[in-house]
Length: 396
Image (cartoon, rainbow, N blue to C red; front, side, top):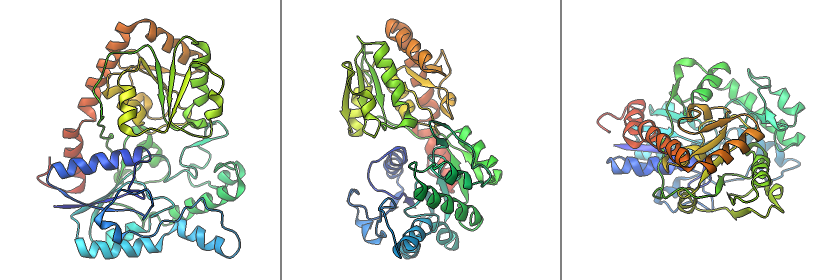
């Protein structure tokens, strides 16, 4: 049995590749041969299949003059990727395909190729990219649904991509074209890890019959240790991730060490806080090792998260999580039983203080969360459901 796994990148970069590589290992352990398809990126893992990959071009490289239109066209509909995939599919004849991130790299140009070849295809959506020009439903420091229903001119008015007019026009055009081509450039099944995302897709016009809910698979590369006396934040240091709220916790609890794992443009908000230790970008194993002995894990996101690994991995390591109740996060945390959900920065500070001061309660929340994640996000359940979605009979 042969499965095509598709992602724009073949190297670790975020939630999409976290699931991608965990899935790859799991399928191989179940006797399924994996054929990857990605861009030829310089950071990619070595793969014998790389000779079939299309060239990578960064959509963020500024292009002006006659080349600008061609660069936009490449980011909207990558004909090279479609041709490369057609040749690969003809050679390997996969039984099914599971697609992850493709926007502005491989692009939805790959879906007609898979459909013509009769390859059953599922597409896991890791964020709001299919229907939101900046992929976050977050603009000017707040959640944003102005473009819902295809009203993409709002993305230009509010400069929702990088705060600039040029990129915002480009992504508005991209989304308008993809919406118009959605019928022909679609998978057999859209997979939404959270109900929040599933409902948002349907509200935006994606046919309800083609959307299925499948929570993320999660695994960790560490063993849970004793609860520490510190706070840990792991993620991109960006406005939507609530870095300002991490700084607020650090200021309110000056005797508590706050370990920050990640990099990004908002790092300056943490400058001058003596109890904050910025560890920079770490590998997954090291992130998990630091999470495994945290006292409290903070997930103060301000955008409507889909199903963040920042929560799931901490929970699988039996850590108490204090998170803002946004997007799909409330689906992962029952307040007071498997973690704490808050709405405001003062509530975030108070919940963190309470759990650090009550290790027994913190441990009970972490244990309950761990049991929940093992049941709903563990490999047996996930691979069984994914095999059914892809029509891979006999795989469990």
